[in-house]
Amino acid sequence: MITVEEAYERIMQVFHPLEAEKVSLWEGLGRVLAEDVYADVNIPPFPNSAMDGYAVRAADTAGATRENPVRLKVKGTLAAGSAPDQAVEPGMAIRIMTGAPMPPGADAVVRFENTSEGGGNARMTGTAHTDEVAIYVPVEVNENVREAGEDIRAGERVLAAGTELRPAELGVLASVGRVEFLAYRRPRVAVLATGDELVEPNEPLTPGKIRNSNAYTNAALVQKYGGIPIPLGIARDTVEDLTAKLRQAVELKVDLILTSAGVSVGEYDVVKDVLNSLGQMDFWQVRMKPGKPLAFGFIQGIPLIGFPGNPVSSMVSFERFARPAILKMQGKRKLRKPVIRAILREDVKGGDRREFKRTIVERVGNTYYARLTGDQGSGILTSMVKANGLAIIPEGTKVLRAGEEVDVEMLDWPEEE
Ligand code: AMP
Ligand code: MG
Image (cartoon, rainbow, N blue to C red):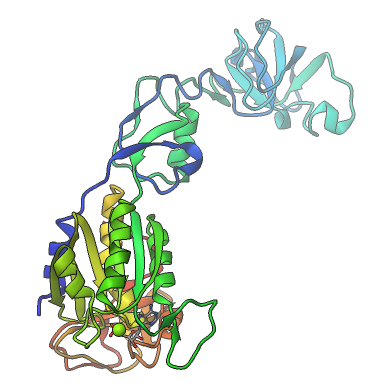
């Protein structure tokens, strides 16, 4: 039996970021940039008002108070999107809206609230545009003015290759006009279930059959981690059928093949036989529970991870070995789920293998508490529904007592490095 770490290393050494492709802004969320991005203009491109108010010469407002306001001649209005057509001369003001370019001559903005238009703008209050405005509070040079380039300077590198695109990064790409950019391709992942007992969820359950759930959890996990699932249906437990399905995956030029079941030591566990004949196959026993049997290898150069058939084993193995591979192919560096320390609410038995127990973690104040979801059988898929984490019980642990601390991998939390 090999350790979880050894299996992880042997799998991960095979995967690398895929080629870059052109990606548009609408499709960019969660993708990883494969190029440095530079700004070709200042953002904002021109000095503009940070407030609705009056563009003035700051010096004109010196000493203004409510009792002794400074009165300025109002010459027109500048809306956002308009271009100034006159300069602000001494003793003069131009009404200006947030985002409108500062007119020449003006060096500050007095907000409406500090003027005789304090009740809101003329349209809101129904008053006619005045020829004169009273300024109640002085402003300093540059007050309420946003400088050109204060966010981004022309020529600056705004985003580096390797950056994962969140909504904020997409906003920056939009502001510098990058409607397309290079990002690592998302892996196409074939998802195949195997087993004579399986029917698809829409088919009637005849005697001896169960519904194929692994294909759906696996496909959803592929999507959750940014891959594109390619469903290949169900292969029967025969060399012929499995061979045909795997050849199909090869023809589809997928980046990874995921199978479930048929990798154990049962009489009809043909996955490893087919893999041995069709490609190069390692078959391992990994020192973990659930998820001991694991197949790993290549079919005509395409990596294949064969999960055990039990639904929980399949999901736990996916989180260990397929999640990081899928993330790495997208150029991501955050491959792991956060592991927190939590206080056990109950005694938990361990064993020879590393055990991953389905766990419900709750936070009380600043402390995390963990309790198991109940029956830990590897066929109890509803235990994964209840769980938000996997408690990790180190190999060789006899028992962890209630009140002791345990590591819990938080499956619902975002990945970290
Ligand atoms: P195996 O790994 O083939 O020995 O299967 C282990 C257990 O997982 C058996 O009880 C199978 O019926 C079950 N199983 C296999 N494939 C699936 C699947 N796609 N969905 C749900 N259960 C499955
Ligand atoms: Mg089977």
